Length: 350
Image 1 (cartoon, one colour):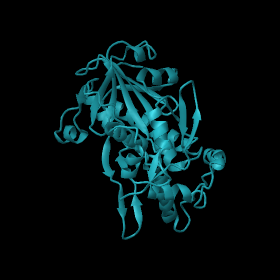
Image 2 (image 1 turned 90 degrees about the vertical axis):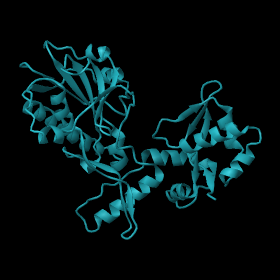
Image 3 (image 1 turned 180 degrees about the horizontal axis):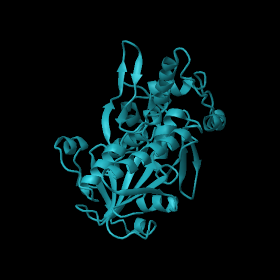
């Protein structure tokens, strides 16, 4: 039966009246709660425990409360299994002896340096893989997909189906052109699943293969589409879901459209490129991560404009837009997923 521990880096402090702030990583947004269930549940746990022992220690809670509390503590990394606990202790020489060290440990985690690894040196790939194993032990890798799961939108065809059918390229702004643009600029061409190769002690991280290159294979870029009078597509704001190769309708797009007004009339669309920064930061963990993201944006912009030209359309990257306002209109966090590029596409000259 698995043994569990309270996260040794957990610190709890008072917040607003009746509120508690729970922090395990000083470089992440802490958890705020007013639930006495969480605070009392943590206080009643022994230093080491199984799931059964945890439930038995929560004598004041009913069965449903115990289940809800346990799931919450696991999901928020407030309790961890033995392997995770050992990895955490390893950062500090195998011992976090007293609570008095927690502030110092928090400062260390927030300011620690992650030296750049020269991949040209001998055995660099092996060293890098060991680093990735340690990173994963500390924290799971970000999902390679982003989903909004609105249940509304439009399923797209794949570029291979269009080209293999030898369909004529319509040279107009419709679903066919949008499909080709999105599939090349953002679409998945293949995938590596997370696999541990025991024979060579190598951990293959989950990553996507795409038509555009990406630093470290991280592919942080996500595409959002604002459509206006596009043939075959209702006006609105959409997210391109790489996982299901479909447009997920988010809303009518009016708020976003008010930020992207242009002199063009007739059919037009805007493709907003917003990278999930955590995908790159998880891998590189230092300010140079920004370089990889910036270069990735250039590749995606180039692919978008290039495919628009292939479809007989006019396209340009625009710079006079409100990035913070666009993120707000899309309902994504500007700090975690800023809108770094906007490409306007239409049929007439820009």
